[in-house]
Length: 226
Image 1 (cartoon, rainbow, N blue to C red):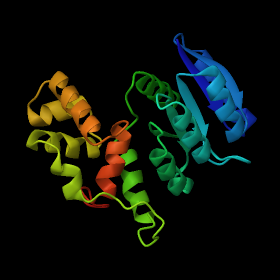
Image 2: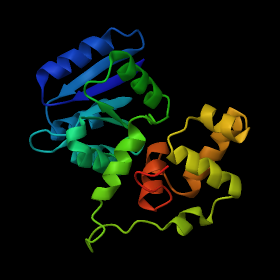
Image 3: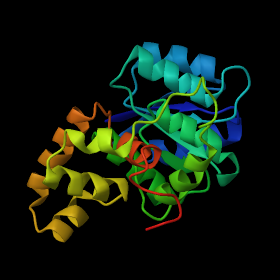
Image 4: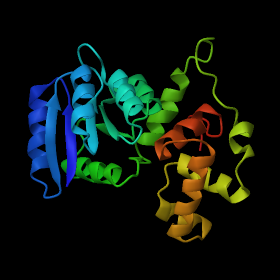
């Protein structure tokens, strides 16, 4: 059974999500929080499999809450809820350790599939939405701010990877699934999975979402270009 914690300041939205998730045989909502600080406290107490996290909330927002939850438990899995009106917040959420994002108006089947995917240890990376989002967000990085974290250059990122791992990494950055990567590189899905695991370990990345973020930050993938 996949346990889900809902963190959103809109009670009607929480109610809607609860009705959808509780209708699934393999999901249960274990708690609801109306702000980030309460969400952090409940996540520490309930240890849900998935935290469905809104971005804009009173007090502690969803980004700070995500960072606090991941800092307390690196195994925690957070899905950010967003609209394209708050792209910059979503990017910060991904960097804070979120496992992906969902649009608030996503179809029910997409919401369910995303939760199951993340609960299974994967990340939510939809080529039609995620890569477009991150390519837009990376232009918002405060490169001129001396206090900002300096992105790793492409050469540094690729230095410790084999030629095959570099090929796989770039396809991961393009939000390709293991099946799609396997087909493109003529490998088995099992082999691709091994390569992805080694890449994440070598680059000290938590999941595929962070791999996409790193690829954009380092310049390996350039916004608005193939």
